[in-house]
Length: 543
Image (cartoon, rainbow, N blue to C red; front, side, top):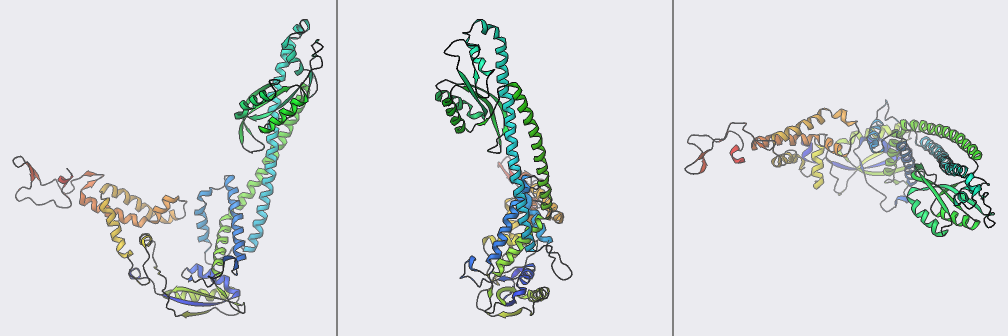
C-alpha cells in the first residue's frame, strides 16, 4: 500500500550503447518494461531518422501478414475478428526465458524472404483460380444457353412438323412462315422454304443467343423493340442464380434468343447487348451440332471442375501451413517495429560506433536494468559494455505507479480524469473505497448485488482460464474490471441491507415495522417503549 500513496522515485539516465548491441539492448529493456526513452531527434522527421528503412520493412511485412490473414478469413480457416486474442497470446509466449535470455524462434531477414514467397505463391494461385472460375462460369452459361435456347428451336421444330401438311396445302399460312427459318439453314440464317411467294423466297433470318441479368430484361426488350421498330422477335426464360464471369458473383439471369433480319439489324442488336452487359454465345441451329457442342461443353466443365478443386485444395493446404505460424510471425514483426521505433529516438555518436540514449527509470529498478544491459552486450558479443550513468536535471520526472491486477482498474478510473504529478498523493487509494460505495448508494439492492457478486466471483476464480480465451470488447472490459465489480457488488449488498430491498421489493430482514396507524390522529405513531428499527431503513418508508 505504501507504493500506492506516492509515485515511484524516478531518475534520468544516459546510456552509451555499442552499435552491435543496440538492437538486443532495446529488446531486453523492452522485456523489463521500466524505461521511458526520451526522443533526442525531435527536429528530424520520421523519414530522416537512422532506422527509417527498417521501420518501412516492418510495415511492408505487416501488410503481407494482413493479406495472408484476409486470405485465411476468406477460406474460413480463422475468424479475423477474434484473431487479436491469439496474437496477444503469441506475444506473451515469445517472452519465454531460455537458459541465457529470451527465446528467438525466427530471424527477421528469413521471415521477410518467406513472406515474399508466400505472398507470390498465393497471388499466383488466386489469379489462376480466378481465371479458371471465370472460364467455368462462361461454360456454365454456355451450357444454359444450349439447354434453354435449344428448347426454343425444338419447340419450333415440332410445331413446324405438325404444320407441314397445312403449309403444303396453304402457302399463305403465317405460322409456317415464322417457324420455317428455325428449322433449316446455316448457323446464322434460315431460308423460308415452304413459301412460294416471289417476294419472300429470299428472306433470311438470323438470331443471337445469350444471358442477361433478370432485372434488365424488361428494359432490354423495350429498347430492342424501339431500336428495331418492331422488326425482331425475342424469346427469354429465367434460369435463376448464375455466377457472372465478369463480376465473379451470383446474379439472377435469363436466357434470351433474338431473331432478326438483315446485317444492319444484327449490328444494332450487338451494340444493345453490349450496353446491357449481356453475354452472347454461339448457338448452332441444327440439333446434331447442338448435341455435339453440349457434349463438348460438359466434358470441359468436368475437367475445369477437377482443376478448380485441385487448386482450391492446394491453396487451403498452403493457408493451413501459414495459419500454424502466423501469430508468431506477427508478434515478431510487431516487436521488431517497436524496437526500431525506440532506436530512432537515439543519437548516433560521431564515430558511428555508439548510440546515445536518455530515459527515465524507477530508482528501485536500477539494478535490474543494469543486469539487462550486461546480458544484452554478452549475447551480442559487443567488444565493450554499455555505459550507464545518471544525469541530474531540473526537468519534472514522469509519474509512474507500479500497480497490480487488483489495483489496475481503479488506477484507470483515476487516470481517466487526470494523472497525478510526480510524487503527488495518489487518489487511487481513496477511490478503492469511495468509487464502489458511491455506486452502491445509487444501486443498493441485495438481489442485484448478489447477481453481480456471482458474476465477479466467477471471473476472479477463473481468471487464469479466461485470460487465454477469445473475448469480445464487452467481456474484455468486464474482465479487466473484475475486482472493481467485486467490490461494487459487496457494497451494493451492504447498502441493499440498509435500504431493506431485494430486487426492488421491500424486505423485513430485521422484523416488521414498529410504527402503527393511529385512527384518532390519522398518522403513523411509534408506541411507547418501542425501539427504532434494528438496522437500516424502516420498511414503512417504502409506502
